[in-house]
Structure formats: C-alpha cells, structure tokens
Image (cartoon, rainbow, N blue to C red; front, side, top):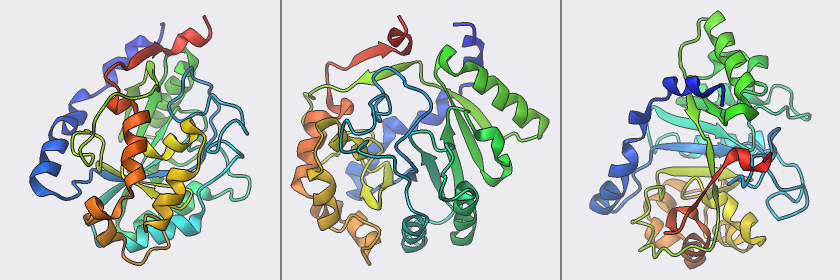
Length: 284
C-alpha cells in the first residue's frame, strides 16, 4: 500500500489502558470509564469489507441499518447534562458510521455538539476517515483521530493532514485500521463483563439508548433483532432516565441479563477464533 508511511504517526502507547482496565474494574467493582462515546449516524461513504458497524450492509438489511438515522441533538444534550457531574473534565468521542457525513436536517450539527460539550465541561474528539472533516473548523474539536484504512481512504487522510498543518492545528493523529473483524458466533464466557477489556471502558450513546461498551450498539444489527436495545431501554439505560449515574455505577444489577447473552455469542472481543480480514479483500 503506497500510504503505509502514514503509520509512522500512529501512537500505540495511547492504548496501554486496554491492559489495565479489566484489572481496575475487578478491583473497584465499578465503572472505570475512559470516555463517553456518541454514535452520530449509521452511514459511511466507505464500504469496508466486514465492517464491524455494519456500514458495508445496504440500508434495510438489518435493524441497525433499517433507515438512515442521526442521533438527535436533544438526546445528546440530555446525555451530557445528566452525566456532567459523574466525571469532571471528561472526554466525548464522536463516531459513526462516518460522523462527518452531512446531516441534511441540521447543517450545523457538529458545531452544535461542540457547543454542548463546552457548555457542560467536556472535551471533544472525533474518529473520522477524513471524508468531510475539511469542511469544518478543526478547532471545534479538542482532538481528531484520522482512521486510516489504506488505499481506500489514503488520499483523504493526506488531504486532511495537510489541511490541519496549514491551519496550524496540532491535536490529531493517524489511527490505522488496516484489517477488520469478521464477527462470528463467540466462544467467550464473560463473567459479568469483567473479563472483557472493552466492557465499561466507554458508555456509548446510540439512538438515545446507552450501551456499556463501544461494540454493543451494533450487536442487535448483527443478529437482526431489537431485543437487546429494547431491554436496555426498559432497564433504564437511556437518555430519559433520571438517575443515569446510579444506573451506571450499579451496572452489575441494572444491566439486563440478555446483554450478557448477546455479549457472549456475538462480540468479537469474546471470540477465541477471531478471523482477521484484510480490508483489501473486498476489491480482490
């Protein structure tokens, strides 16, 4: 791949927390959160082979992609407001899909989210493939992660990087995702999630529902059922709950049993036979 030199800007030491997070959860018996995460949409300009967030699947093919959706500003504000005292000076990460895709119903979508983060005392970063990031002022973000997928978006990454340099914006780095997970039936045995390095590392907001990791918002889509999402809403894991901090702190009791079922049978983090698939296989 002719853009592989971009990997020199990757900083793997930022992910050392993945090794210590399970230990801290076990010791503290409570959420040891790394950040809040917001899934802004379910669409992407790329069609990466075996996309873990199902954006390679056509609209209407599963419950996550039944139609194009954007997380509402009202839901985001409720989420940020209710958890503003739970962690101080906390990070919020925007993901998708591709979070820079334009919301035709709200042209100032990202700018409004940035203002909400400032209002409630959060730091904001975004994970993007670089497609539309140059249409926004980079300084509305405290950090920008450029998700490099090889030749499929190498030019976009280079253009974005050069744009940041011209703007004298330094808070970015290039994160390589050269391979994707092919999600299969898992073989793991999570004990209330403690053994998983992703569990409770993020609290993720997606369609006004809260999830206790970065992967679980997409599990229902892989199984094509709303059972997990509906059970989380009924258990209080949604932006309309008044006591979100209590619900999160008492995850051992507040998470519905079906979550662990879905976590066990479908998450690639619990699959001992994870199949790594090169992103270029789709075009092969």
